[in-house]
Length: 249
Ligand code: PEP
Image 1 (tube, protein in one colour):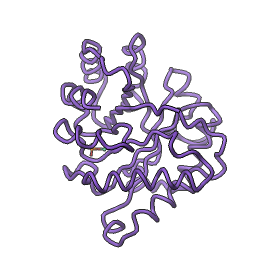
Image 2: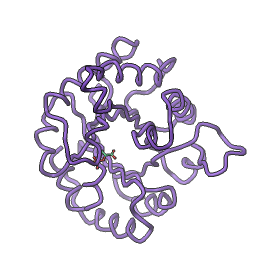
Image 3: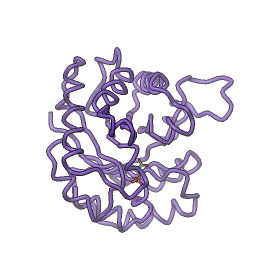
Image 4: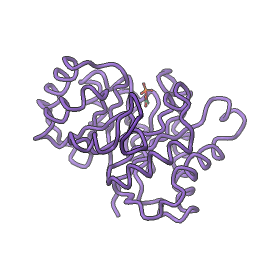
């Protein structure tokens, strides 16, 4: 199976409706000649509808930054998979390090969200990654293995073609410090091995790197065999920078 390459924009809590419109209208005027790469924009919940409408005739797609794992009910402030699907949003980021650290999202919650996404036939973007201390203590592999084996427990039937893993070392997110080519290469290889050791075919899964990707460092990272694209935060807020990253994939 040929792996799909992705360029995903995580806008976090940054763009309002006006910003979203102006960004995506200018994106629609760009020539997307890099046909092997799928682009996905993840705005805040309030901008999803606008994004879906603007991109309806484009090859780019819209994703949410979070979802809750129950179908409906008394969960004030939460949004369900079916609500997202209903407006044409098929992709969802889960387990982002900001959700884990600021909102106490656990590996078990990530698993519940993954279960719900799979049962609703939606496409997950599962974020994993170690903290600085974990890396310094030689725990990177152990942490990645723990995050993945809890999230993907009992998911042998998952359609890996529409599943993205984003390796995002926590210390590289929004810091301007990018992991070295060796670190990314090692981590992506070990993620594929973790899948292989858990009953999946690791070579079928698209693994993106995230953590201070810019138009200045994208080429060397994208040349790595096991890097199938990027999850981009800060640099995705500038349409020309994001386009430059897309073109380097
Ligand atoms: C992210 O938020 O997923 C991310 C990778 O951010 P940045 O590119 O700003 O490091």
